[in-house]
Length: 537
Ligand SMILES: NC(=O)c1ccc[n+]([C@@H]2O[C@H](COP(=O)([O-])OP(=O)(O)OC[C@H]3O[C@@H](n4cnc5c(N)ncnc54)[C@H](O)[C@@H]3O)[C@@H](O)[C@H]2O)c1
Image (tube, rainbow, N blue to C red; front, side, top):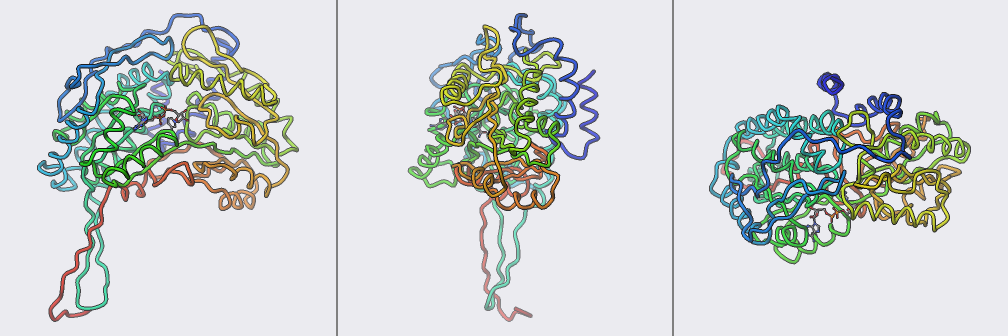
């Protein structure tokens, strides 16, 4: 019932803003569910049994579900317990080759790039409709495989996925070139053509949302795609592959490969017949991907990489509101967001009050089974990430930051971590420089604007920033001074389909979402025609 209510709010909302919806929900959750779990109580009860069967575990190549060439499979695990959900076909070099051949044929011989843009847009609209129709099954698979909150997936992420596919369906028949004035008797025009076969590699933190960000613009422009999912979260994209067929997407236009980075991912990046790559994941892997692209056929690459985003709370801020937004900016999605506000800078005049309240808010955070309505935090994605986050927590303590709350695992099984808050954090501590990707808030103190701008920019990353102030002049100063791809002022994590997203510096190259994403999936052809006796020049 609660889910229905939030759904209807979404359909009446003018924007699929994640922050708008989640914050509204948060306040209710905090008061009701806090009675059930506190962050110090062990997670005693058995995990809730998901209400779906895993039907699709094979690779999706040329419109068929097929075994891997090697016959190998790998297990995908439930982050609540570490137990196996299903064994999934493991794509390898040979499977990438098969998928690229299918995508090449679909591009060179098939109808997709040649059909009218309006026909393409109708297919994309049908895909969106089918995803919307199967919202609950998809959300269940996604939660089971990733540990994300069911309510978050079902009421926020899937509506956003549907929205982004409809957004790009709307773009399909509005993509066109220009007539260009030139010196001399020439008629000059540009044709905007699809690039060809696109390789896409996505991470585990938003498996199906990243899938939609990638395929939406690529398909709208008429490309064909080979997409490799993250090895931790293969299930939702396979389920959706079935829906793509049902929607009438021609065979070979979208191929989905489950498998590992260095093998399947590496083969896709190095493939001589892939015309473009798009990647979301860590900065280190981004470097590898660029070098594989450069060392093969110099295919262009767009990258969405890591971040260490500042969230700056100014002296004029309402402290209670700032605490709530800073908490959301960091802890949302178990802290597993590339743009997480993971350096909370607070003005010295309100620092002590802010730390006390941030600690109290973290203590109230409800952690538990992500299927349980009312929980605010589920488990981390995997044992590797779980260990990595705990290691960073230890390093925070060892380097002299003050551990205000949390700092340990929650319960004895699965990958749950207590919401953790550090104060007295210094800029050179690892917890302030590295992307932790977990529920660990680092609170730093600042004195004045110039100083905090300099410190906020002193990072190799440049993905996003949050600023919390009532002063328009202060907000305007930050808006221009911070070297990041997105600044949220008095909000955070607002991800409308039309808003471009991407990073400065080592947070990436290119932009996703919005009109900007289309450019990454188009070639521009200049056509110059000599004119005889032109009426005008
Ligand atoms: N920016 C983001 O949205 C984002 C998302 C997930 C993870 N991360 C960061 O990355 C860290 C590690 O997470 P991860 O291990 O899943 O990220 P990763 O970069 O290793 O993996 C992301 C994707 O890249 C693939 N990949 C890995 N190595 C590859 C290679 N050599 N060639 C081609 N593809 C390859 C993976 O299989 C996966 O599909 C996290 O702690 C976090 O800091 C960032």
